[in-house]
Length: 348
Length: 285
Image (cartoon, rainbow over all chains, first blue to last red; front, side):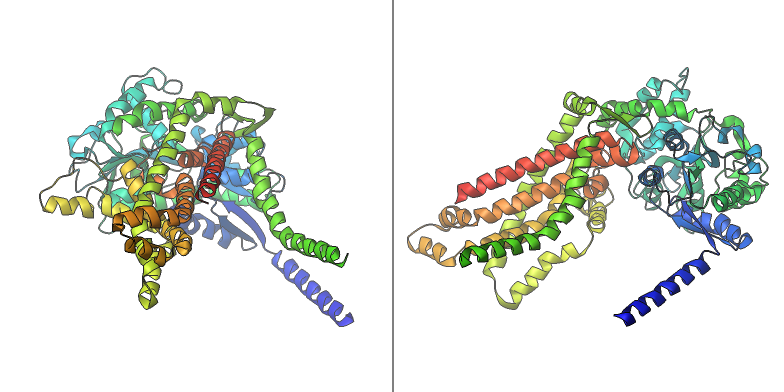
């Protein structure tokens, strides 16, 4: 018995020693997107950060998409384990309202002062870390000439081969906004009736409303010929050897999807987390990630190479619609209902 | 007296043995379900918040909204169709398997079970390759000059084909389990007494295997209603079902109260099918 107690005590001491030696290195738990984003963000931002701060280790968690990340934060609200999380700006607003995030201002990172106004939304305790734009993604074997209008979706060449991510996915909402603006809608942040009407004429051309694994994958596999997607991903896939995928920003303009970074309220490692956020927003990290994955930088001081900048929408800010995502969030449910009741049934 | 003590001890032992699983079920099944039920009576706030006030709103939307009622009807009818098709495809295979013997039987059994060793996601993508516009079937038919005027995938057709194949192993195993009562001598007796093969099948084989059929149908129906990956991949976003709707509400729109309400509805459907199943079993006996 005594022997057993001795052994246990020794083991416990050993474990405590192991813990204290490990705690010399602070861990920042970060929740982000999975797949390509994770690979490239780790290489372009997280690894350089850890090299500069050898005492901090960033662990990357991938609960899933924005909603799943928010769900994970909600589940651990009373005992947070994550320190930093990224998600779409509309969900960052929901998280802010639920008290999940601590504010990020210039005391957290002086770089906040250099962010574009679109990256700092009042009432949201999170700031823009990447801008992505809406583009036409297409198979250049089927569509020989680079399309310059969103109307290319109606083109007979892609009849029955259009793949769209339907609402409630943001891509579906974004396309409706774009079409509303093209149809001469008066305020696309409040009313999308005209956009819905346009969608109804597009519906019969659509192959799938739920591309699997996603739009980019279906175009690469030549199962779909055209669709509406995000620029960053399209640019990376377009660079792959033998790729048939290409992307085009039409002349009618585009709009930004904003990924925001948030500092978790009562984060267990808040100090290290603030350092990490500061680095994420720095011109250096913003430049590195734009050049790696072609998200437009949110820091106006980022000195991105012209070749990379060319492939984002950052060079032509005047073509970007001024979408108020928080106002859109209010009507997103309603738009989803319209799609399901009036748009999608027309494609059966 | 001693006997009574024995009985108490035996009961105590039974309770002690059952206790762990009961506790596990209360913790990981009953508690979450009750939680879901209470969520379904809470208000959904814009942007995915959950209110604290009690409300009937989710349930009244569910009942009044044609969209949800259609999704419910579609889920149930489609699952019934799939169950029926699965039974149709599986019954002959199961019967043949039951009557075969030796190594041949083992080999066939492994063949039947082997699809279960592959993930349903992989098999579903396999169906995409087969059914797509540029896929095996359409291409093959075009080679011999036939052009199908409709799509085989990204609609209800695709979902029904895919799920039927995916559920077949479950049906076959359930049927085999129920075929224990099927004594070949009964069939032989029927044939000797002058029944035609079809009569022998209809009046002897089928009634004897009815419990297995009921079990297989229950299993497939429940799996079809709750299946979500296959409709998601093969449905092309056109086929709105309860399971896909729950996923959308829970993961995409973040409307957990609505998702909770729909989940409880699915549980009710399962409860009803269980009642039907027990009724059917009693009728067979």
